Image (cartoon, rainbow, N blue to C red; front, top):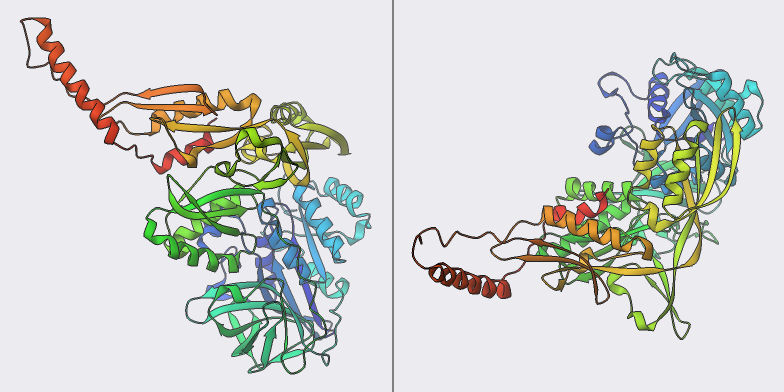
Length: 595
């Protein structure tokens, strides 16, 4: 065990985690020849296309240091705030972390939040400055920032380049010398923590685990503690580029188990595996329950695909434990699920993965957050969906979630960022100068305001130099109202939103204008209205497609024309009573891009 090292790579988005991981794998000859490509560990097409890591990936390397063989288990993690749950689970399976900082950009928001997560778990931190080969690199300045953040010595900071391979040997040596070996007793009863799982259509569910105590052999009879299900370990092994079966894995190591599990409810990330005949006395403390930030309805386009969508979501949940869902129904869209996501990017990725991995085309409703509604008797209910709002006469007050956000930027962009946050009903808490011209601004902002397009706007006004991180702070009373969209007097529940009183009229007006562009013209007039309760606040009309019935009538009395037009009008009126308005998928998504 003294020759095992478990470590992960943490950093802000685009600081070069996956590229550096490629060089480590190349240097240790774990991957070579035709397998070697950029971002080896990002095995999803989606990750390669977007150039981001969505899943954390574990891989084992062998390294010789001072004549001794070492086993290094590396986990490459995502950098985006929407996938921070992946990072927290990876950190739980490690004893050390490489903190990567871009030499051109310095310390950013996600660097700090991932670092705190690692420190909370008592990990040994090895700071690495990446991209030192670039002309715009400022390694001395970035070193000062890291020293201020970590309080470490200057000589402890390593300099490397994931592109050219500078400093890769020093990084591996530092991992062997500084990261502590895992502690645990190979002879104690088996205790293994499941930190990830994946669905394989041929072999069932494969669970990835880290063994804290004991050892697991092929064909052992094991039990999953929280579900209390028992299985035979058909295959156990370690994670190289592919899964490599072996006969035994002992304490301190990371591996996988295949036991022919078919139903996704039987595997929970954070669960403990133990032996049936010699169980451990208590389960390992798992991960914190994930709190979704953004809720949206996900509906199949064809109603008969409802059960397929449920199965697809369950399989996806195995691989993405931060996705939560429960059934709901809508008048406009039929049966579907109310899903909880960690953010808008997460929602987009889930939609894309459903389409690619399970061939499920879905309609997603307007995302919103959860509100607490207090009635006159003092009872509290949580509402994730505007359709679940009780009658206005019964509501005493509504509380909405506020987040504490930290924005790190250069001083040039303080003005526009302040304007943006205050425009989103934010309250300035404090601002601190970190080093030189870099400043960290703390704002309390309603979560509902940042859900839709806040991050995109922040990036564009700061030319990409502002980094953003947040956590749920508290709930505060707020003047919120439900805005309904009516088509020909019928409310479309999938388009209704909860919004702040001050924004309601302008939002309703913009929404009507946008829908007028997107809904195709019919044989009858369509009235699009925005309403708060019974009061209509905006209206647009889509004119009917109509034939020129007076074309054949020329000359003579005007009453002949009027007779033809009246006849047409009566036909249109009859059609309006029986006609229905089809709302295209684009219209549901357009609400997100109103600005």
